[in-house]
Amino acid sequence: MNYKNILITSENGISQITINRPSKLNALNVATIQELHDAFQSLDENHETQVIILTGEGEKAFVAGADISEFANFSIEEGAQLSQQGQELLFNYVENLKTPVIAAVNGFALGGGLELAMSCHFRIASDNAKMGLPETSLGVIPGYGGTQRLPQLIGKGRAMELIMTAGMIDAETAKNYGLVNHVVPQAQLLEFTKGIATKILRNSPVAIGKAIKAINDNYKDGVDGFKTEIKNFGKCFGTEDFKEGTTAFLEKRKAVFTGK
Ligand code: COA
Image (cartoon, rainbow, N blue to C red; front, top):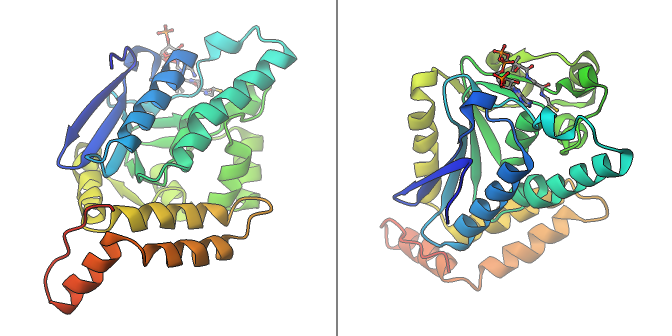
């Protein structure tokens, strides 16, 4: 597929999506959101890809937010539609993929940029990264899941403060808050992230997909995550990966998983 706003590379089971609008600090316009949806869908369906890394082009920004120039003149209905379509197409979509998605946050992750990083399964930041949800400074609220995922990740009080002040936190603070798992020098960000992706590659893709679903169900209204865990735990017993994993352990060899 031909993309105008993103780049994709794949090697040894790890695919990297790079948002490529550096002159606009990789701001998310509607076209980029659609391209990201298409890319995530095709990588998730492609069995060669076992881990996806999402990052931004350049040294300055992961994503500096939704593209403000696109929605400045929107009506109430258009605003609600922008939020709903974005959540469905990209933010909820990424969170619920069966393939692990790691955000490599290489600079500013603001507004929709932080919301996108929070939709990924976990985050690693470069030491120059800055994160925040500055929407209230524009007279709007976060619309791509930020009011929901930020309190889940850092707690209600901290999320309230960050959203009300429209402030930014640095990478170390983000790590202390639990928003990112690791902070590394910018030059090492992708290598470090690929190192973690490589550890994931050793494990059963089918089990990882079921674990993602069970963890996510903890945060869904009206869904009992413990029941999902029981169901998915049981389903694993019917997979080739489970037979291979347990047999390899008993035979004292490394498992070779097929994801079936
Ligand atoms: N939407 C659209 N364009 C954006 C953008 C966004 N969210 N963020 C940055 N850009 C554009 C700027 O308009 C500028 O374009 P131009 O050169 O054509 O004028 C370009 O990216 C570079 O940004 P600039 O503001 O000149 O860089 P800076 O280093 O002075 O400041 C930021 C960096 C991140 C502090 C600043 O760009 C910013 O505050 N961006 C908006 C953040 C935000 O409010 N995001 C939430 C949106 S809901």
